[in-house]
Image (cartoon, rainbow, N blue to C red; front, side):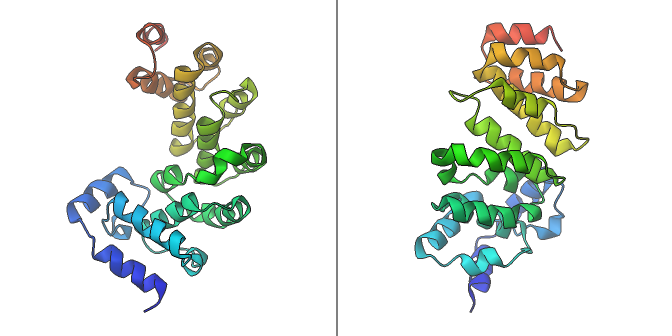
Length: 225
């Protein structure tokens, strides 16, 4: 039995039909028929075991995958790998096949944190893509790594100036600015006047729902709704 079939056998051995229906409803960009119905901890364990054993190359080379869960395992494998150059190369191969927000958002390589200086050039490249989830991934990384000590308004300018009619791109833009309001309130607040109305309203709503935004700031934000 080849590795691909072993993975599918493991996935089918861990089917949760109720979870499959629940998860597919949350991810409407993927047809329900592409969900097997396996919970995230199982997918993470499969990925960890494959990285630990080194038996993952054939799997990540075999694109596109058939099932949502296979894409999730692929994302987790890349997240656990520790060679920056290899991860960057493999992400370049994988991103064009990412077709939903969950796989995009859970693709979070641990090796990126210690390579932020080199990573930034790739982020800029991904933000220029015409592919929804490649752009979303780039915004996510700016939110994850450049809203704390390394924050600079030039990054917020980039996100503010992204022009898109895509729901999943603009929701990530709103998430970026809502997180920015929690971490860099005085710097991010003026950007609310620069955003399109849809993204601005969702930014404020996300900030109002956040435990990281102070009550005082929430009071100010309610006046801007």
